[in-house]
Image (tube, rainbow, N blue to C red; front, side, top):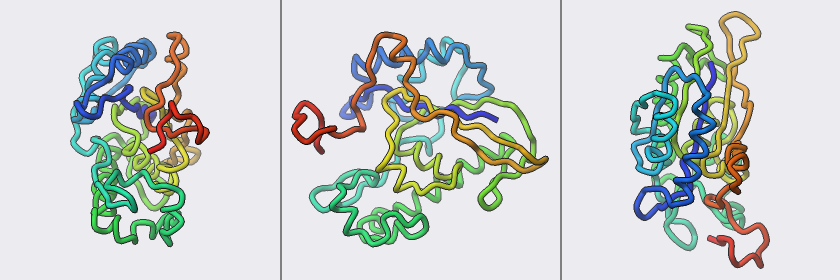
Length: 240
């Protein structure tokens, strides 16, 4: 089985939609996705994800099932300076978190506990696990049982913070590390596929992460959304 996990286009967060650039990115993405023979598509209920999916689905001649848990990772936490998303902490603030990069204990921090981050992650993983089992693969420990081995292609239109939670489940990687050391640019395409080297047992391997080659093919540069300034003196780039 192959999973396409796709981040939405350049967002207008205030209106939960795409910017004009985001709509052009979505159109470029659709030129790539029209050649993908998907068996099933799923989409976040948020506007920016649905708006990204629409031109792709039209060209793929597909419809997408809307899933609540594919929305962006929702908890808001009281960080040192302000209330913000759970997946964005300044390096100096992470240094004060005793278990920040412990894959088992990282949620044991007052602000994360107050925001019920652990419970949200468990809910998403349970829902994702149920979806994977519906498509033939059940997680058992760090691997998957191939209950119904298949070559199906599944497409998920969603969000970066949420994508990291999905990848942490598939690849057994710490989600907090993924949040702070990776970025999938708007309309970035991540592809993860099963490997079944022994009958009945599978693992997932990431083939591409946040690929934006479709944007370059359309003569565009990836949007900066989700990134922070590359150099502190780059005042035209986001600091916080």
